[in-house]
Image 1: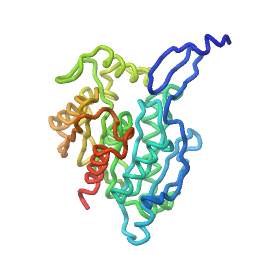
Image 2: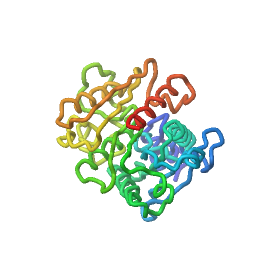
Image 3: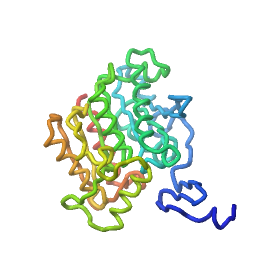
Image 4: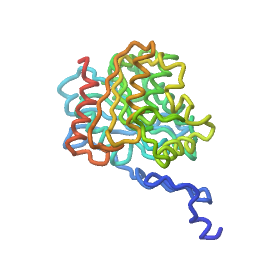
Length: 320
């Protein structure tokens, strides 16, 4: 193939990824792999596990090892879904490994960070199916008979939480919905924490940007990741169109939004939808001023990022 053709860009989703006309996918960040370890600063240990050899779905597990040795009590279980527009990122890259490590240290919880298959090579809804398969794998440990000893020994399945950022927050929401409909034996989902959730819709809502470029990009990423979608009013991206919303299988919901994020109003709108539904749980929204989308990953030691981490940890530890 002519080099000029192979280097011609078909779709440009910078700073996330580029798709070339020859079909090549170039991810612009989140492709690095950090090895598992015992983190000296936090005392958190990590290890990797294969969930499905057939699909390649896997996870990175975390435990607050230095605290477990002095306190044998079982700990809350956090299942985390990474963001990246359904197309990029992984539990193994530096910013997600660091974030989940810090969250485990702050909450004193056990965590499973899910590596679902990504679009466009694996278009949605495969990522949702992979995430549900991961939850079923996690559930297989609730009687202490699963393949991973960390989950058998330390995870409290009566105190389970889902969390995620951006596209991962969307996934966390849908996993809570599916749990509400289908259930997971032995699993009590106490809450979900959605950080800058990636929801959208065909029509602007009150207070939302009308900038054509922003709206086109927000919808374009969705259509790219899920080519079979009916559009921006697909219930998978627009919870306002989901007739099953009231079946959300969590007791509490924390929604975190950022003042300068184009998705800010969608987070507020989601909270209002829950309040107006027959769901019956408690929802809280926390807004960070003067910050943009997933700022906490880009500047994890900043004052606002630390405050956000502590808020998510407080949400998880609320019932302890």
